[in-house]
Length: 243
Image 1 (cartoon, helix red, strand yellow):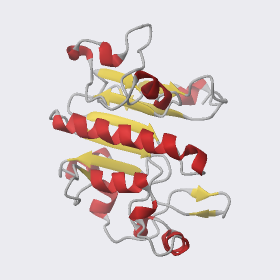
Image 2: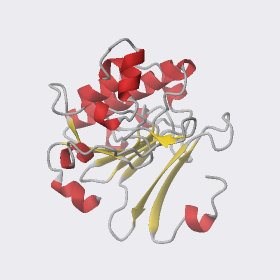
Image 3: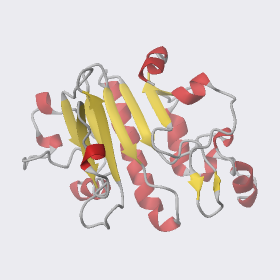
Image 4: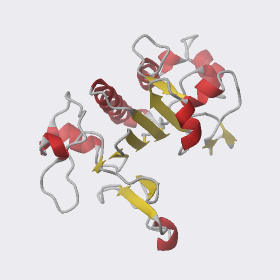
C-alpha cells in the first residue's frame, strides 16, 4: 500500500480504515483496507486484528481489556496473549461495528507450503471462532475478503487432481481449514453463516478469481479480494443491495 498514491489510498468522501502489516515483515507483505461512504454509513467502533489483543491508535489498552461498552466483543478464548499477538502481527483483519451488523474484512494466509500450515490453521480457527461468538451475542456478521479457501469441488479447478494425488480422499478432507469453513456455513448442522455467492448461483462453475502464477491459470473461487461474501442468517436479499 505504500506504493499507492494518496489520492487513491485516501479518496475524498470516504471513511478509511487501513491496517498494514507489522514492520517486522517485509514491505508489501500483507494488509487490509476497508472504505465506507461517509454519506451512507460510518463505523461506530473499529478494531485491528481478530483476537482483541492489539491496541487502538494512541492507546496502550488492548481491545479485549477495554470496558465492555467500548468493545466490539466476541473475542476468541483459546489463545494466550503471545499466540494472539502472533496471529495479528501480519495485518490480516479489520473489524468494524456498523450498528446494524459487524463487518469483518480479512486477508487469510494462503496455502503455499507446509511451513505456514500451523499459522494458517490457527488464524482461520480464531477468525471463525470470532464470527461464531459474535453471532451468539446476537450480532449480524458480514465476513468478506480473501479467505484463500475453496469449500467444494465446484469452487476449485484442480480439485480432482488434488484428490487423485491424495489417494481418493474427499476434497474437504484435504484441508483442515476447508473442513472448518464447511462447518461454519449452512447447510452443515453446525453452520451459522451463508455463502452468498453459492446461495445465488449454487451450480455455476468456472467462478475462479485467483490467478495461479506457477500454472498461469485461474484455479480457485474464494481466492481474490472481495470474491467472498459470507453473511449470518438467511436474509441474502439485503446482500444484493450491498453488492
